[in-house]
Length: 80
Image (cartoon, rainbow, N blue to C red; front, side, top):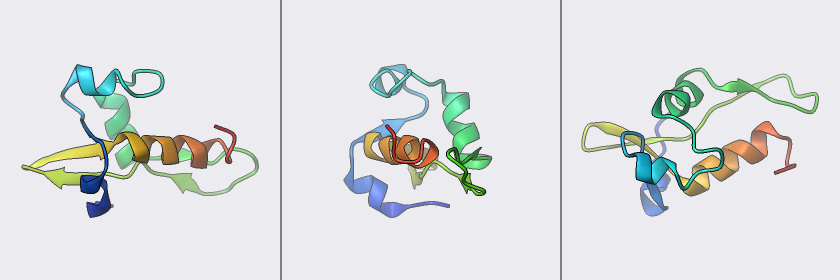
């Protein structure tokens, strides 16, 4: 689901390798898109799915460094 607060954070363009290189694990654009579209199961006994937040900017999806950090924290149950 699009999240406009991302536009006030440190933007990461999926198509720009230099932007993605700043993220933990240097994920591919395809991996980021999968996290946005399909999510990943919660760890640590969770039963839900966690999705990477994104926003639309100029007709393209973008995320933020902060959104990726929140995503990783949610997936790992607050353990990084």
